[in-house]
Image (cartoon, rainbow, N blue to C red; front, side):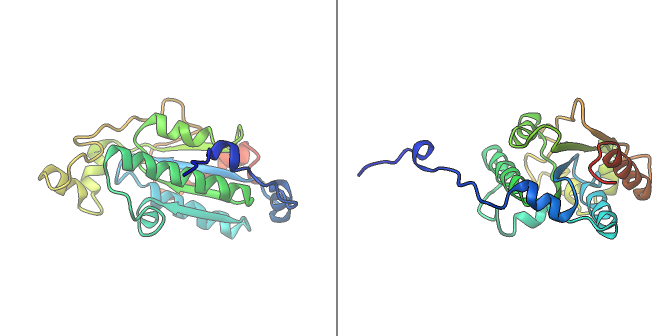
Length: 203
């Protein structure tokens, strides 16, 4: 049986309706806002509140949430290092396609390793990936523990839990650094909106 070389035989087809066309129709600049931080830091909460604000301003958005994608797109993956990397790779590719559709994409994932976040950044043109560090200390996240995961991890029921027995590599130079342990949700959303305006992503 002949094995086809994907690199040589799978060719990207450029359609007549382009990313620029879709963006102009939506009257916005596409971007991927990548929310990263420890479990319980507030990634999904901040991303959801920001999406609501953007929608109220008339922007076209989509929020990709860590738990939600594991119900479908990544339902076949576990939590080994290899599976977690594949999880982020798939989400990165999906976010890229959504940005190509002209959307403002909000992605809320722990994504604990810098190399994986860089992998997603490298998929997108310069300026189209904005790393948002939802910066809450471990003790704050563990105190919140909205899903009871830290309690289970401390009891040994969840192995390789990020922040407990698995490393979280904080961003070294994120585009947006949110002091999630100190400020209110409204203040955190306000910081994001201000940064998006400064970068001319929104008006």
